[in-house]
Amino acid sequence: MTHLFSETVAAQTKQIDPAAWDQLYIIGDVHGCRSTLERLLTELGPTSEDLVLFVGDLVRKGPDSAGVVDLVRSRPNFLSVRGNNEEKLLRGEKDLATLDDDDLEYLASLPVAITWDEGIVIHGGIDPSRPLAAHSATDLQNIAEVNDGFWWESYTGSRRVFFGHKPLADPVVGSHALGLDTGCVYGNVLTAYEYAADRLISVAPEQTYENRAEHKWVHPTGATPVGDSSQSTPAVFAD
Ligand SMILES: [Mn+2]
Image (cartoon, rainbow, N blue to C red; front, top):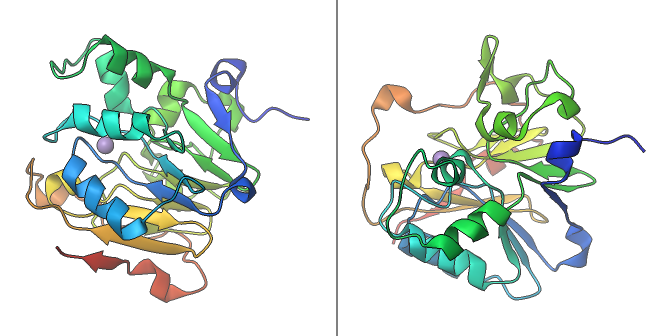
């Protein structure tokens, strides 16, 4: 059996089996927006038999990072990968007074990638010009642009990659990659993907916690569309 990742990265990955759960949900960057996350969870209604994964960046920028960490950590069936914003705290590059040592220890324990036979959850991206095994944890947490475009525009790997990191005006919906960071902390929406139903569900935040210039939003083009084009427009619950 060939190894997907380098040994260092492999030691920080978690393998799951979607078939072992009733439903699998994957949620985009939350960035401390706990009340928005709660409203999204109300829409999804996950039970303890469902698995809820996060693409990382649970923390920073928004109003309640500690609350988001508490919520995710308190559910045995909730699991996030470690994003670049968790990493900034762990490296001491950024500081959040509301997080204590236990919180940081929990963030440090999160995997860099969650994998199953057909899928990978990472925070950032994969450079299609390199084998997966040539990527460091930092690469997987940070890659967005490669060569002349975004990585998901040229990635054709057999495993579908579920990712965040790059605030998107709309989700990236491709058969090889699905981008879920719809920038809820910047006043857009928080998005989840319901795996079995191949469906996107979004909720709008109560307010914008950080401003983001219009030119910095990515308006996805070029991802290989899925068969049913109606899937690219998520249902948005405004209240
Ligand atoms: Mn982010």
